[in-house]
Image 1 (cartoon, one colour):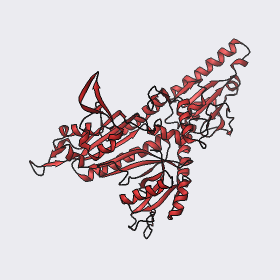
Image 2 (tube, rainbow, N blue to C red):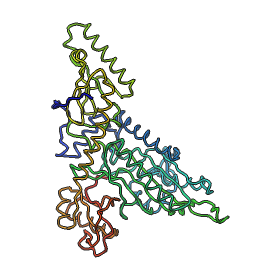
Image 3 (cartoon, rainbow, N blue to C red):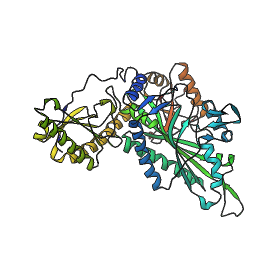
Image 4 (tube, rainbow, N blue to C red):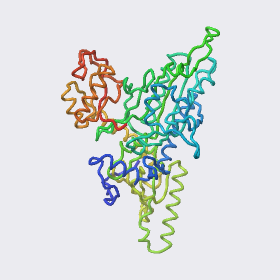
Length: 492
């Protein structure tokens, strides 16, 4: 590839008027709106997903759908109204404060209020029992692409909306071993989505007893860290439900080894939402707009005709536009996603070509690379091939650079006073922890009393080699350390 890099001239007249490092939330809200990802709706906390955002979500659906198909996950569609929510018990108690209810049909009150889907769990569990009665029906894997509604006090677009898009997957097995294996298999799929498609490094780990899905055996999660601001985002989860909900909803199968004997099914749940797009914006966005990884960008290359006003006559102008259209068509035929004349830099298109008459003559095409914030020049004679090589390099470099930033931002901390002072500065800390619920609640209470909005994010699978003899980070705790946990700010 014949690329020559140099300093890129950045247009100073962009419409973002807040810096990411000055007011993170205001910067984020401006960016998701002005980059045409969303638009505000008449009802607060609800947002219109514009084509730019929905195209990104469709790429996620396509990628995940292919992976699910490989392992036999089938798609279904479920109603918006969720019955039997009370059967979820402690899970329902957790969801209840944020659940909408249908109370009237026209002027007539409904006798029994119906939950408007905050989750599809009760819908799935109530039907699982009818679908799976024999060991021959298992394993059973279904996925639901849907929307869900929850009342959020302080909504954040994509991250915490009052209505959001998500996928919810559920699997059922005859035994605990296979169901646990499924939990980690799905978590790996989410890990690959973020690393391969989003170019975002993640931390896989187990949720604490406080953080796990209520009523489950255990939960695992994908944690994304925004290093510059020390913000953690739970980007996906995969949960081992065990047999708890099977017993509540009478989901069982005939045991072939003991005819006539019923055995409860082992269940798992795994979910990823449109929060992933919010994580993308927070991870790569800057004060000049979005930066999209090539694999996920709806448009990978934009062609901008330059010098039209400088053409000597209409014939030269006609020939310039004609040749640019031919280049556009050839690039599309090569499989690249290309459009002409999108001038909005905020939208994060990876590569911007600028083509004028002199470029057609010299066969040298200047371009701006959004991620590098630099200009380079490619040869017109093999433009499609060189662009593909460059796009592949951009995708790889985005993941590589963010991985280094992630590794550099995590600090090991063994001392409580240092723990406090670092969390006040929004650090991400790896500290020894006993694993007990009461201890975690005590840590959060002490942090809150000092005005520190940090908590235990997850328990990374990759642990320090030597933690024996270390004391729990909680100075009041006398219990044995079980592992190191990740602590920091969490936006969700």
